[in-house]
Amino acid sequence: MPTRVIPMLPIALYTAEQVRDMDRCAIQDHGIAGYTLMERAGAASLSVLRAQWPAAHVITVVCGPGNNGGDGYVVARLAQEAGLGVRVVAATDPKALKGDAARAWQDWQACGTPLAADAAGALRGTDVIVDALLGTGLGRPVEGGMAELIEAMNASAVPVLALDIPSGLNADTGAVMGCAVEAQATVTFIGLKQGLFTGSGPEQCGRIHYSDLDVPAAVHQSQVPGAWRRDEGTLRCLGPRRRGAHKGHFGHVLLVGGDAGMPGAVRLAAEAAARVGAGLVSVATHPAHAALIPMARPELMCHGIENVPDLDALLDRASVVAVGPGLGQGVWGRALWQRVSQWGGPLVVDADALNLLAAGPLRRDDWVLTPHPGEAGRLLGLDSARIQGDRPAAAALLGQRYGGTCVVKGAGTLVHGPAGLQICDAGNPGMASGGMGDVLTGVIAGLVAQALPEAGMSQGGALSHLEAAATLGVCVHAAAADRAAVAGERGLLATDLLDALRFTVNP
Image 1 (cartoon, rainbow, N blue to C red):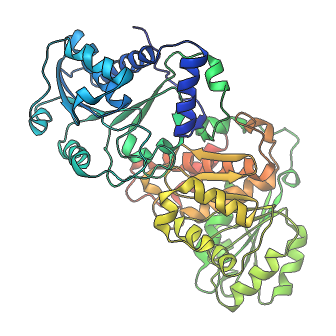
Image 2: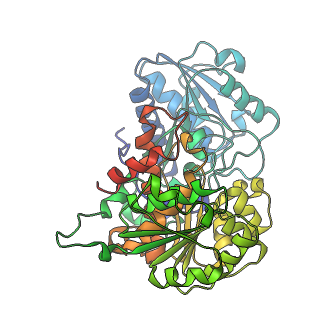
């Protein structure tokens, strides 16, 4: 039963409801029987299992009450036919199954192998567990016996292959619904679900595999993707420079920040802007350390700002202003923020500037906001748990309230702008350290300054210049962090990204 497992993931992402609509389209409009799709899903899953765990001899399939459970019964039958030892744990009475899932159970039952009488025992002494417990339709926290099964799978120390989505993970938001399976691999069907790539999704899913179940292209064309996945392939839009180029072609970034005693953040942001190719980089900072920053990086032009009017000449020369790193929320920082927020050119807003914005909301179309979940919560009057509970909705709400393009940082960083939602599929846990956000601010500002053509980002919808720069910046930042983390994620510092940035923007 040949069914493709596509080696390179597509970039289109969908909500759970959209994938259900595509499933109905394949069945009703293109005449593919639902059970045929289920068998294809089972075959693709077994193919992934055999490829990832070639030494596996015994598998345990945990089946739930719906079509996800039906996929599990198909995997069990095909695995037994292939000569594997198979144990099946039924979370609910399979006699209550309906439709295609009921048929899958009946075909498994015809094999003559009884269900495992003891779930805990079935999870011991097995080589791989197949999670077919809950699918994408989960709408409330997992509890009771289902939660106990999930906890038992997670405690078993046996690798898990999740079918379509790890049970307990929200397919749209990437949030854990009470508890969720911690899979080492996930094979997902028909369309990639956006929740697999943000929030808790990357941690719960492990390595993601994809099969379109051989449905016609028209099935995917019936839906406009809910989001777009961006990875290192996005960097292909960074072509070589013209031989006659000079620094004036690549813009002038002005970094505003670094109150007394806080020069590090603005210095990181400024050097990042230079490392991604900005023609000129100036720093407007507190006079107390204006002379110190060029000692570490002489290419940066630093200016001590005592009074707000001192900014005006610098603003006149800037192509883009990035404000916030080390700015503080005192008298000095507030005064600079008020002046910069009235400037007529594009802004990148981060850190303390976001906190000042939360205290006095403004709306602009020509800025990029770069909050982490805590800052996003302050901007929206919510706690960070609410933000993490539905990151895509938070990004959309930030756009509605403040305008422009919003970057919600974290695992599976989101970029939301007028063209929709982009999700970065790169980065690593080593980035959870101080200064990483400052580097990202500088990266985005440096790319905005260069006025790179948006045409290279056209796949997945037309992006504005700021959306394209923010999306590319997030991907450059994450790819540089992945390169720097080759030496180890623990202990990764923001400064470790600076040299890696140069490599990353010259693919």
